[in-house]
Length: 387
Image 1 (cartoon, rainbow, N blue to C red):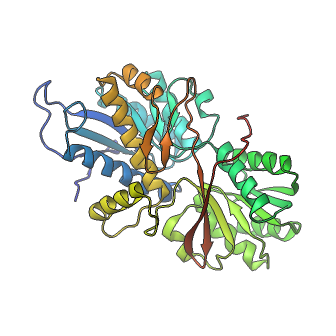
Image 2 (image 1 turned 135 degrees about the vertical axis):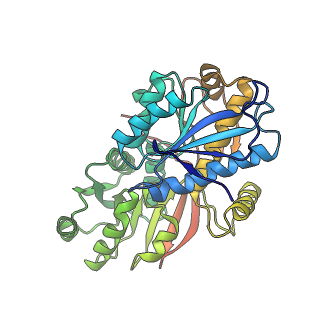
Image 3 (image 1 turned 30 degrees about the vertical axis):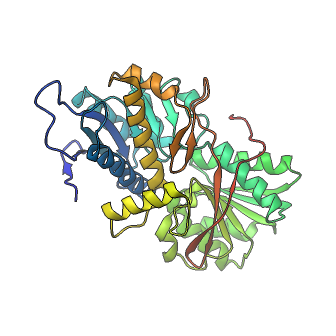
């Protein structure tokens, strides 16, 4: 079990060893991990933080990084951009030896942290925020360990058009979410390129009465594309089904809410794109090894794609520090940008020249009566450009 130290500034520091603070030779390698352990994003970020923790413990059980132990300083962003901005400043002020930062699973919150990190010349590697515009918004310093929304939306459109034989679509998207706004637009672009017809595009809020009104006026379509945040799912899916709509529902990785699906009624004919399938029946050796290690560290929990993303992000940053031969933030950034063929649980990661987003395959999952199952993997044939 690990000891969690929570201080007034809400910086929680985890260390797997008590050694390493006495001299320059045995000082730890330190990196920051910023996740929303509370608030609306906790269903995504808590699993990611556990995956990152596991990666650090594995490193410390071996030779560490640069022959030194690793300390991950974990910060709870509370799903509040203003809090995140303040805590990022505090983290970099209080921990000047930090080599870089990882974390977050949503565009709006990661920007609050990454812009501060960039001002301090520190790289921020997001494990799960999927906007392909992020590297433009924070040039040089913001990298993705995950695919972009244009990739997963294109994969969804191609799969719906092919496997579901969908020729018409109705779209519902979270009105105040950058993630949802980008995701549905990329889906529509690719679906229409394939010859599909988007019959309606409806924004929504979390007001139940308003959502019910949106549902009742949706035209009949072959598929409903739901661009939702994790905390929307428990409202959106039952509302659609209670209205008598049995149409297949397809969404992005915001629908990857793990065991929470078991608490939602009438969850049939639902599909979503995500980063990896972590089920016990997955025969991939990397997934099996990861599951075994996670079960030992967290015997009462099951890993999901966001657990694996946090794991990969932490390993990727530690690999960049090792390859840099230094904890100097600029050297780490350059080593990360030069990453090629990193073997992650969620896929192979390479940053081609000038790109801060890896191209990775997309996993399609199905939900039936609260149970999730693997459908297929899709590498889209054509991806809409970021815009």
